[in-house]
Image (cartoon, rainbow, N blue to C red; front, side, top):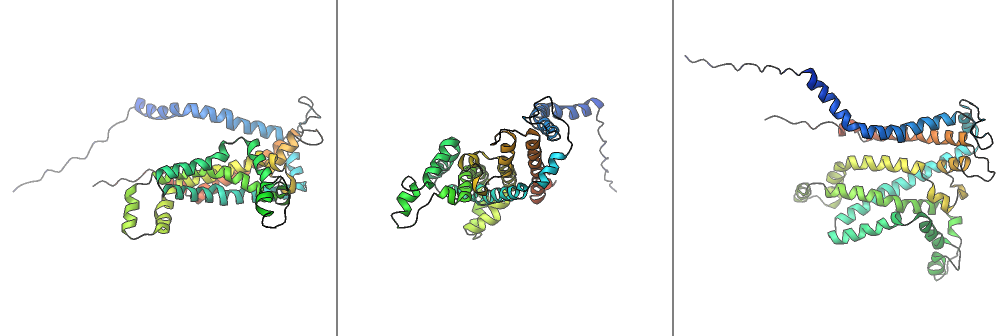
Length: 321
């Protein structure tokens, strides 16, 4: 009669206090430089901005004679007749630019440039980088000359007049069209770079397997490429939304808020740093900026829930054979 030896249960290894402390402290040491920079250049400025928003600090009070007014500036924002108009303008600007250019056009360009020869794709992507590389003043002046009235405007002189169509100063006549186009071409280049890198990093075996299974181009994009781009999509959507919420440079140079194009960030700039009356209301402008901070935080949380951020950051499960 033979007996089989029962394997002894493994004895759990004791982790010393020093090892546990090392495991806890080592990651913190590596994160310390980034944490210090985040606190110094992101967290503290928000705290200072919030503190200024609780005062009546302006050029008329100076930096010494201001008073704490609590949430009076926020009450003024709610009661201001421009609040609704500028909020609608901001939503319109962010949503249209984000959907059609920063995400839509960027994804289309990335897909097109990765499905042609590498050299042609590189040249194609380089052309899309030109709006981002061009200085803002030069870039906006180009668009102003494109839409200027005849005989100076390129669109009027070389397109509409030869066709016998009516001409106009298109920047003034269609300000929203030019605002979205000028910002859209700049934003599309950023998303194009991220999406192109994500598409190139997809293993070729997946694409070959999809082709063997008979998938056409749209099916490969829908069922292979897009599901594997959740991280890049989350990053680009979140980053570009926050960027559009706070950007006003191109709008300021193109229309300066005329034609209903004064977005929230430009409104804050006008009230705090540059207005016709010369009374810079820093407290009120800080309150306007804090509203953007709150909107940005809420939008980021919504995006992370939509893209299932918790699932993205989970460690992959490894099955033992």
